[in-house]
Length: 353
Ligand SMILES: C[S@@+](CC[C@H](N)C(=O)[O-])C[C@H]1O[C@@H](n2cnc3c(N)ncnc32)[C@H](O)[C@@H]1O
Image (cartoon, rainbow, N blue to C red):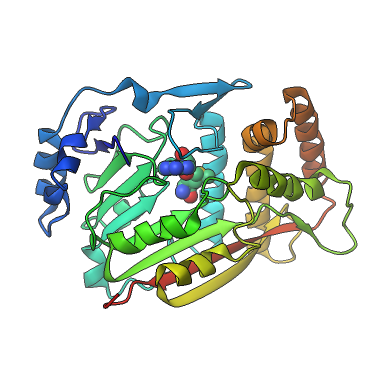
């Protein structure tokens, strides 16, 4: 994390404050058990500097915008509006799957939950749902890409750090009560290294929750066509991950559980979901979830495949456009009983290492 920046609800809308000076000082003022005003007011204001151009260094690939600042970490998701809209639909899916809950971890009684220090790793469009529903919690979202972060209407208890989570972390040890990760598949070379940073940054007894969805689209017997665009989707992502060294097989290879064990987490709990794609389910919940996943995929198949299939597998833009058209047609036809897995793994940092 060489040049962190902080964007905060306490700053003017759209302003990004460089945070390097605080980092050198151990950023202690941010993380002491102080009130929210001191954590998000003074400390941010004192480190304000003008926006570094490199923070917003985006590039275009086949007309789509990506974060391209030179760093080890790399996101394969476009950070443009079209893709953010698709991810927003999937955010709704994740909540529906969890029966309206933002998280599955047991974060203790109501009193304790109110005061949590929370870190959302790879926060993306950084919806402020957690901060809204826990107004006394201190929530930090960290992401490599600044463009997609909201710049207005933020609750006061949210702050954003713009940084590469695959570099060594500079959050002081034992800082957070709860760390959340969702959908970093295809972005991480060394999962155990990332989990070790999370372990270090958590307070003893703190909780880590990591949700991933499989890229493998399964199709129930009788509706399966092995040549279909739906069947091809997952295989291509798995190959792209093998080429880039950033695996997409996080769910298949049980990486969440294994990396949690390797990093020292205990009381590990795994929850698996079958997520329908399309409204073929017999039950109402499955129907509305499947319809939403279908909408998200139809909204931006190009955005999902553009970088991994283009850069790692050498697909030309035209070929990807044709594939996307086939996929949309299959989704619209709705004949396949397609689904994918979502896996949530939760672990705790022990009180003694
Ligand atoms: C698929 S999006 C998921 C966003 C969010 N977690 C959610 O559940 O909606 C992946 C996010 O991870 C971020 N990301 C990928 N690699 C990263 C890195 N090395 N450091 C920080 N953020 C990263 C991307 O910029 C993107 O916002």
